[in-house]
Amino acid sequence: MKKNIGIVTGGGDCPGLNAVIRAVAKASAKRGWGCVGILGGYEGLLEPRQTLPLDYQALSGLLTRGGTILGTANRGKFAAKVGHGKKRSLPKELLDGVKAGMDALGLFALVSIGGDGSLSIAQQLHQHGVPLVGVPKTIDNDLEGTMMTFGFDSAVACATDALDRLHTTAESHNRVIVLEVMGRYAGWIALYAGVAGGADVILIPEIPFRYGSICAKIQEREKLGKKFTLVVVAEGAREKGAAFVTAGAKTKIGEARLGGIGAVVSAQIEKRTGKETRTCVLGHLQRGGSPTTFDRALCSMFGATAVELIAAGEFGKMVAFTSRGLGAVNISEAVGRLKTVPPNGNLARTARALGISLGD
Ligand code: F6P
Image 1 (cartoon, rainbow, N blue to C red):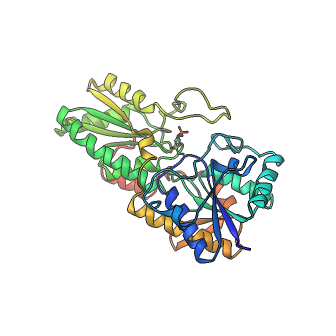
Image 2: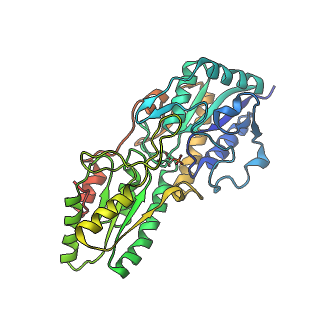
Image 3: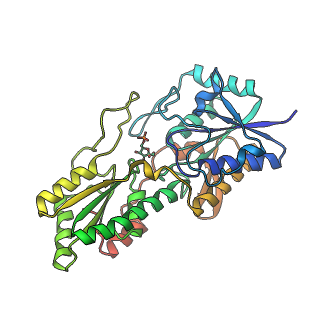
């Protein structure tokens, strides 16, 4: 009988999910295995089960297609995060439900593509005896164990493009423009895009900021004849001693939805400097669309390596991109804590060396 593996995508979508699905399905086919996509996250394994056969025809066009053809869920029955750094243990019925779903569908292994939340679920499933491997996905790049997650490069490209566009309009109008980017509690997108897009001020969660410092940078530029300033602020950045700025109420499972810091920072800059200041919130543009060239290659490597791990019986592992190339780490090492920006790391030091203010 033909052996089948299942692929499940969980959490927020990001560019490259379909490219990983394609790579897993193609590499499986080479080994004579079939592939089945689970629709709507892990819930697709529960009754009534929802799946999509990933045969040769189904893979056309997936390398460049944004989103996920399998759909995803980040706040359903399987939500494993209940707030900043807090994990939830899934009830045994759900874990058993996944096993039963795999048996019913004839799956001998699962590839779980996800970020911190979905891989926390994967870790619990692994401990419960489900044979699976993980693939690190998130635009936030905040997973430990891998130097880079897929989707991150595409989000940075989107934010950098936005900065290039904001640059010309800010300069034409002698304005300050504040660009708010995603990233949750990590400043990777803000810092990479800020440096690549020539921002003057970059505010990240890892370095609490002071308005005095931001305004001093704007005034220093004025004196040098630069009448405009670009500020990038990560959604999780906050003033020293202040709370995170959140958009609306907490979700049902208690995780805060970050957002709104851009407008708060803009208002303070305008009030303190008297300079006309505008805000641009990039939002879900960072998650949509086609993956970059780098992400397409990374997704292809991740997918192929995930299949190699399954073939070697290396369950409970996550594919990782390391300084030595592709490798694997235990999923438990990747989800234990968030990988945040080192405040004195290469990129932060580079930013400072170039005269960019980090707001401290
Ligand atoms: O984790 C990816 C991410 O895009 C974060 O950067 C952001 O805080 C969050 O998801 C937004 O989630 P949602 O799409 O549920 O609003």
